[in-house]
Amino acid sequence: MLPVRRVVSQRLWRRSAAGALALRAASTLSRPAHGPSGQLSSLILAPEEAKDLKFSSLHLPDLTLSKRQLCDVELLLNGGFSPLNGFMNEKDYDSVVHTLRLADGHNTLFPMPITLDVSEDKAKAIQSSGQSSIALKDEEGNMIAVLDIEDIYAPNKSAEAQLVFGGDPEHPAVHYLNTQVGKYYIGGKLRGIQLPPHYDHRDIRHTPAELRELFASQRWERVVAFQTRNPLHRAHFELTKRAMDAVDAKLLLHPVVGMTKPGDIDHHTRVKCYRQLMPRYGEDGLLSALPLAMRMAGPREAVWHAIIRKNYGATHFILGRDHAGPGANSQGKDFYGPYEARDFALQYKDELGIELCPFEMMVYVPQTAKYYPVNAVPQGMESKNLSGTAVRRKLQTGDDIPEWFSFPEVVKILRQAHPPRSKQGFCVFFTGLSGSGKTTVANALMERLMEIDSRTVTMLDGDHVRQMLSSELNFSTAHRNLNIQRIGYVASEVVRPGGAVIAAPIAPYASSRRLARDMVQKNGGFVEVYVSTPIETCEQRDRKGLYKKARMGLVKGFTGIDDPYEAPINAEITIDTSKTDVFAAVDQIVAYLKEQGYVANNSEASISSTKQ
Image 1 (cartoon, rainbow, N blue to C red):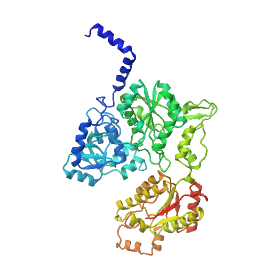
Image 2 (image 1 turned 90 degrees about the vertical axis):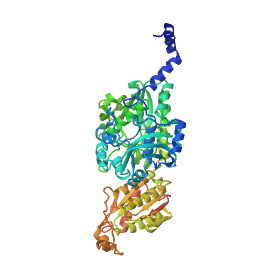
Image 3 (image 1 turned 45 degrees about the vertical axis):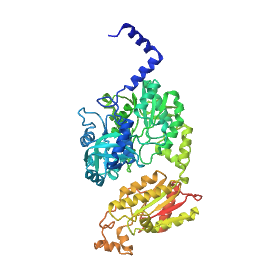
Image 4 (image 1 turned 120 degrees about the horizontal axis):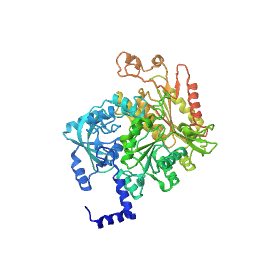
């Protein structure tokens, strides 16, 4: 037992400002992280150990991490994915996919498989090296970590797609899984040398430990976190303010700056918007960037996001409408219900260890000039809301965005980053069988655009593309896909500064066409033109006799004969040149470009054309 005099002195110390701050700091830092131990699983070694490991790992086989893998590694190393201490082995992977729980003996809740994928060739090379560890590097060659291998296994991608994401092949994560994820996964523990270096927004990039210390220094005992991958408008601002008031907490605005849904506004623009809004929260808000690679997994992702915010020291987490949902597929069907993610996460509230704050969608009521939850609008009053599609449309056309919807400072930044379509670049991407008329229509379109825009048009025909971009490729499925990806990359770079591209490859596979679309749409517009001319007509037009040779077996892997052509389902324009002449086809395309705002008579965008 302590002497009485010492007990009294401790009480006096606790009542002092310094003592109170220290106790609050201890309380904040001791908030349990996710997992049975309650400890942050920071995997970065001490400086001397990291230096020694970096030197000793030079002889190991290495792996250059993709952007998604790099995001995952960062959150594994800094403790954001606690209690994980590396990439999931097969037992953990199978358990998480099927039960949302780790095979760790504690049945720990963790809804998202965190895996390191590699190609079959890479897996074989690692196995044949005889090494039990691999060095993980970023694209610049920086050594990030060493993975001590536990197993190399072939995942059940079908089960992963169905159970984790819902199975729709158009879901962004399912598409990524089927087209970009390697055939094998490597499981094992990480030893961290350094966090991946970042050169942007460094003042708001905090590790979980740093954020917890910051909360302690600010004496923030209750912190409500808000997840976002989009700019904040007035409805989001009102929602966060209501959440802060409801739970008497400070706000952690914790936007994702890693990978999000293809087509989302870039994170630089989003962060600029957030920085403009933070003064509206006064001293009650904090902005911190989260290097997360989202999967857009709706229900599972909502649980995952709550776990991550718990690890970052938040005590509460906001769940709203369509949390982490990717919207709708090409048929207009939503991948998830509007509150499916929110309600799913609430099932786990008792074991998450972070308070969940469910909210309805916020709508504006003109009669009161206020925002209300959609289920609390005063009786007899009408409400207003703008969808994300409507906002994007207004940005594209230059139409006014009403002040009730967003803040002037946010709209200004969005307009600077996303000028009207008349000033954006675009790609007209033709696809169809050999002999369908793609090249003829593309050349005619080039001439028409030169006529109405008074611009120089550069045509890169198929021979040039094969010679300059793809000279080493054959006509295998993999190489055909790679050729289309290269065309997509070139098109995206031309589109970025406001140029226009005409691409006219066969592009037989839906997956590579989608990759090309995703690349281009990061920088501008993409218009797919499906030249649907029947194969019988294409054969009649065949001057080189390729179809005849293919049917005789003299040419192998010919599209439409012994290699499939996957016809587009939702191309912006479909043209059958057996029924539509070249002039009418070009008129149809130009009319669409004008309707969408890409082409005007005074347009000054440069145009270049690409053909497989």
